[in-house]
Image 1 (tube, helix red, strand yellow):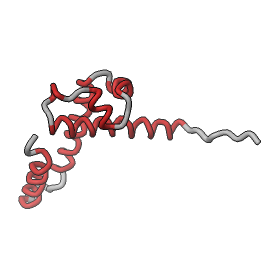
Image 2 (cartoon, rainbow, N blue to C red):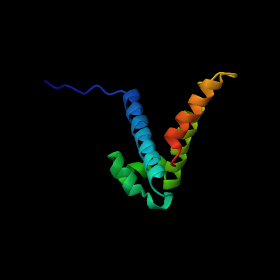
Image 3 (cartoon, rainbow, N blue to C red):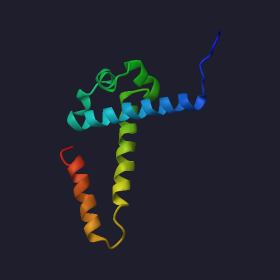
Image 4 (cartoon, rainbow, N blue to C red):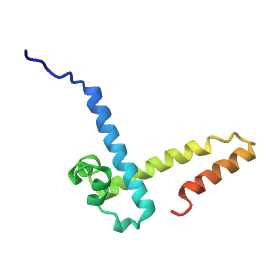
Length: 106
């Protein structure tokens, strides 16, 4: 009996997007813990569980990975700011403290 595996482009795209995000989030964490110059593509790849060529395929360079990490930070910071409605002082304070707790030492 000859069976073939079901294959869809959407599942491949989902896997690619998940890998890209995992690499960017891994790099983001590393950039918070270490100086930019001390973080290498090889170290990012190892921590993300991929080959260094996979990182290059997704981002072209360390600068590309850093841009992707910055985009994640920007989107998450905007989402945190949007928690508090205009005039909601307590909500604004919670958002600011939450962001400080997350990024304060960086």
